[in-house]
Length: 172
Image (cartoon, rainbow, N blue to C red):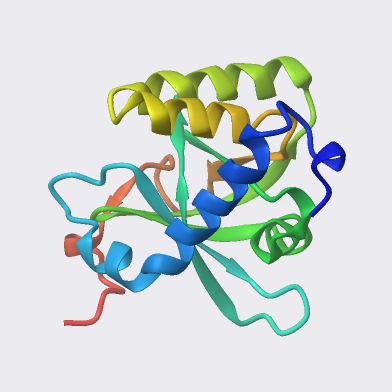
């Protein structure tokens, strides 16, 4: 990996990428099992649908929530399949603890909004440790930001987060 090709300080960025990659590989299934109803915590489980196959693919991502909308950032830019899938097939599903959302993903193009989301990430994760906050803030600089809006059905009430425990589609 060539250091000069990456944005940001030359030493922090390659290390940040390696740390995030190790964390992701260390146990997505463990993360999925530990997301509780009481504390959705740090990660959202984002399910996108394959742009070619249509099969569901789930990833755990840090997120921020603003006015009923979720924002996630692709730490690896356009190298990630979840981002390509979300842009191509726009329909997604998000799980935060017991809350489940079906929504529409769209790429945020406004640089002011992207910077505001980056600042929200820094503020949210600052309480989880300065290293994590700094790592996410640096890693997300100039990366694609995706906004997820709740889906609206003409027959359904206004969009809201659903409690998965009371969802009729959840198997017993």
